[in-house]
Image 1 (cartoon, one colour):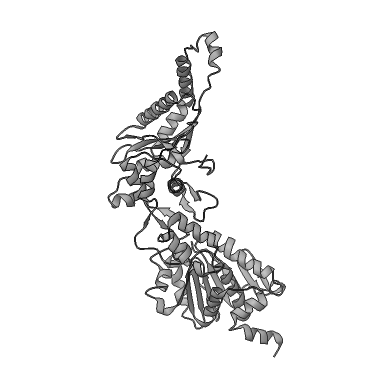
Image 2 (cartoon, one colour):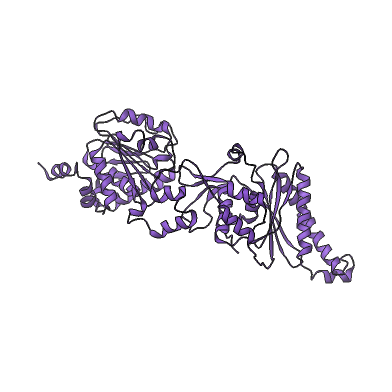
Length: 485
């Protein structure tokens, strides 16, 4: 028997040794357990916290299977292109590239890895789970399905996998953060558990997980939160969603006394027209100190624009040295009319405030001699800013371990962070405190925080959080996320 055949025969049921000897990686105990499970069991399902090295072990399984089985087919999928191509596929490329023996035999392309000379018969292929037919049509003596972030993959994508797994020798490896309480992945750890080797890896037991990451999650969300359960402990979320903002933070913020230099005012405007919702104008000084918001019902957008102009002029009179005015309008609905009105009036507002300040100084800008003196009175820096609650998601701060699914989450997340840090004083308003502390969140299939929709809040008997939205707009920085000036 040739040495090659002997090696293949040896590694056929020895994935850990293959990884150590051929790929020259050092799997930890959790990764070894996953590798051995794929060899011994037809179906392996792994729920885990973040950062346990699952993308690495998935890529090792793929390479091991390709090198020890003749003419295998290995369909790989994930909920997003980013997870599939930028993480899993890139991970496989790294290990192949860094191992000369593998690089000679395995050809890596953007969507397929195949054995040299056998591109159509001996391969692993990447298919995003957005396509219901992603895993259709894979039949061979040796088939291995690898499903990353499996909690986020729709059940319809799994259906052809079950048919293929009826073939003797076919295998399935699913890994992911347990983000959903329903679906194929959830069932593999519950009602269908007997059919799987269902594994659980708590990030706190894994040497690869940075303790600073664990501490940050606990500090930001608490050890009893769904964020901690999913991202660290590798547990499914609770049946009841978590509240994003704790009431005790709001109550403490309402009692704060924060002195500001009053160099800047941000006014958040959340616009409603009819029905039960309200329009709210929220004034925030130096992004730290609140004054009482103004609430209006059943008003036309022209009226809300007028109230905004009155508020700008009121604070310009009260704080004659304040230079920066940022008016932030929610433009996803009726607010676009308010934005257009204020934008068109911007120069007029600036001019009227300047004339009023000149008059208060005993000067008449229309007289030549007084006009020259008026030039020493600065005009306010007024900007009308178009904002959108339905925009792209991301992080409140770059160092944060958690992302929000959209700009609504980022805005509310910024309020949450400031309240938790004790750097924001809010209006002592029971309605505002109730709105802030009543909105719940879930962790979606991508591991991002997703705020409860207003429709869902209303079904729970809660009003639209108009004042809280106005506060979130006031704190919002569209030109980046430098929220703490």
